[in-house]
Image (cartoon, rainbow, N blue to C red; front, side):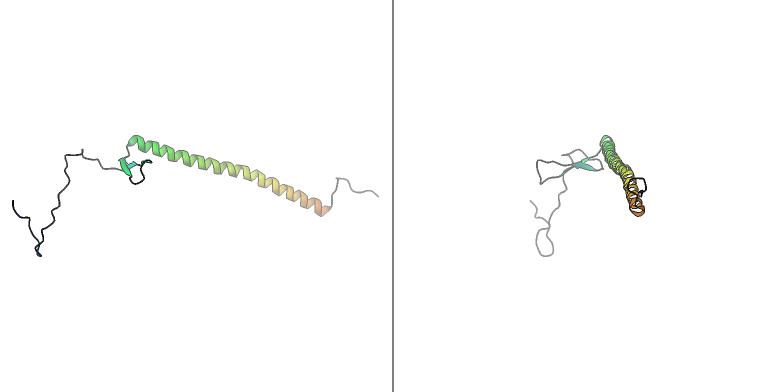
Amino acid sequence: MADPPKDRDGRPEIEIIPPERGREPPRESGTRIFVSLRRRDRVHVARLGRFGTILLLLLVGLVVALVLAFLLGTFLILVPAIIIMVALLAVGLVRTTFGARGGRPPTE
């Protein structure tokens, strides 16, 4: 057997062996996502296909719609509540300013 090639210092050079291409089928390019809850030391990445992309977009749209509905509902409830509070404050201010107690002026 022949000796491996050596560098300038006389040490053998490191040979880089590429991985075998026959073990796995060739992978397509794209994003791959997979999270396993059983083992915390590994994160597997899998390709996200058309169905997965559509499902992910629908889920994001649903979350955005729910947040928007919540904010809009809160706004629509707060506006009348603020108007009622301002009206009550105005009525109270008018009553205390003009001294109305029961609707009729006092008689002597």
